[in-house]
Amino acid sequence: MTGALLPAGCGRTDRAAPARAQELPPPYVFDDQLPESLGADGTTITVGDSSAPVTVRVYEDPRCPVVEEFELSDGAEVPRSRTRERRVRTEYTLASFRDDSLGGDGSKRAVNALRAAPDAKLFTEYHEVIFRHRAEAEASGGYTTEFLLELAGQVPGLRSGKFDAAVATMSHRDFVVRSQAAYDAANGDDPRGPGTPTVVVNGKHLSGELYDAIYDWDRLDRILTRG
Image 1 (spheres, rainbow, N blue to C red):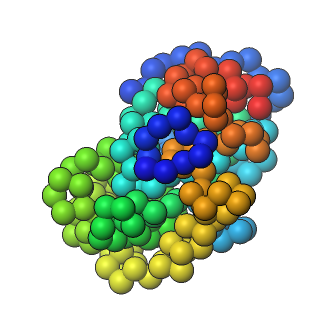
Image 2: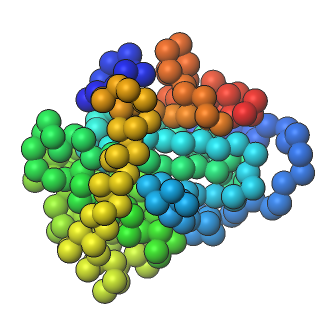
């Protein structure tokens, strides 16, 4: 685990929505209604309404246990919930540097598979499955083609000839390289990148004293409400 912006390291709770400062369109009821696309920069997976007032960028490596901790925490549900409400647009920059320290190519294969998921409009669902099984992947040979396809089978509608071929042949390897480069460049002159997980709200890094807020519903929700 690396990261100049992190202090250390590489359940959803139902809460009332905050008062809206502006009238928003009706929320997305189901995750499969969420718009998903490759960002204009070619390095980012974008989820949610493009006109949402708050942009949350998340830097993640699929093999990072600290990212797993974040994704399974109460805090990670905040951007997911607010994205459904059209208050937030979430952008994912997917790194693969953990392969360098752990060996193998599991992060690269997982990032490639995640890049294939928006083509079926099922990135959100697959992303949750990937991180729910990170520890299992590491204990059983990593994010292999077979394991990634097995996990995809848990997302109704994701498996197809096109998706399976993209996973098996690493057809999005160029995206994997570009996304890692975007991660590397995100911390300026620091070659370590911003660390994973890193959460950026409307351009502001939640680092230092704000870092712990990413794991806490109330604190992170207040930050997103302020924008």
